[in-house]
Amino acid sequence: MAAGIPNSMKALVLGAFGGPLELKTVPVPAIGANDVLVKVGACGVGLTVVNLLATPGRVDRYPRIPGHEIAGEVVAVGEGVRTIKPGTRVTNHFYMTCGNCRNCRNGRETLCLSPRGNIGQNRDGGYAEYVSLPERNVVAIPDGVSDIDAAVASDAIATPFHACVKEARLRAGDSVLVIGAAGGVGIHMIQMAKLCGARVLAADVGAAKLDFVRSVDAADVVIDASAGDLAAQVMEHTGGEGVDAVIDIVASRTTLAASLGALAVGGRLVIIGAHPPKVYGEDPSFLVDPIRFLHRGLEIHASRYVTLAEIERTLELVRDGKVRSIVTKTVGLAEVPALHEAIRRGETLGRVGMVFG
Ligand SMILES: [Zn+2]
Image (cartoon, rainbow, N blue to C red; front, side):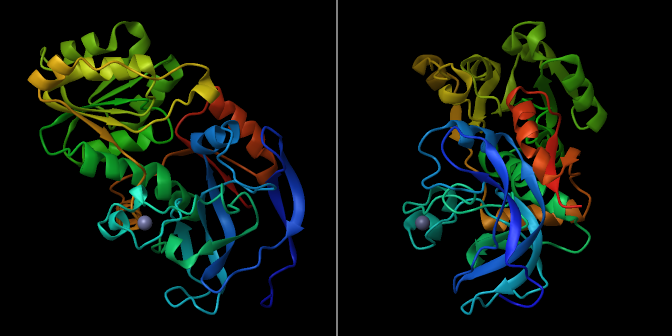
């Protein structure tokens, strides 16, 4: 191990499926020839990890250290690493892709045909003082962007970039409904949609969440989805036409049905959230009326995460102040499990994360 790097570290370790995350002292990970060792400065804490912990079969081997929205400083590199030097601050891509398949070579790497799993799931992640990451998974952080903002940008801001630009194809003058606007992805989605030039309708439930959405000042219309039929409310706000796109981050059966009902002729439904039955105890499947779908020329898109290039672009938008990273709470490593529970209950606003003080 290089000078200054300890042999052991603190980490949150999952010992078995369904078990608690335990704060333990474990060896600092060894790095392979094509890996970099990162001293973790911050790690995002979000619903993806909560769903991961509750879904059997996702983690392939125990013990496992979760956490995939990582930012920190590279302190050592493997002998085969050419593009990253110690001292560089980096964030990471969540998926371990092959780089060689048709989709990887076509700029659709999140649909890799030979995926090797995900960081924090099939390889230890960032709920630790140090993490080993593959060279091809890391992206340099521009000066002026903090670790926590970069960690959030790698997923909760980059994901909106992909959803708004590539899937919803938002352009000036379009209208878009964002469902789940107060969440970690949603609060950045409304900003990204505004940046694309769209008129933004933001829906969520509960006074605290709606006030939070208003406080960010990116939405043109804030809708309380619990105040009545969501599609009907959207029709009222759009002169009966509906919206050009819906980005559904909740993606329950109820919100997906409302999404289809809220679309204008030629509208795009972008499904981005996951509402796994194992976590929520309800089936999110929804019905599509093929005749209405056909006659109105609707589109349904799956927005799966982002490319590495999109993470780079997103970090530049954050550096330039075009999109603000909204982090409402940061905790130390030991408090992450309690934060997971708050996320599962839907009690958090915006993005939350773990930082090393
Ligand atoms: Zn591939």
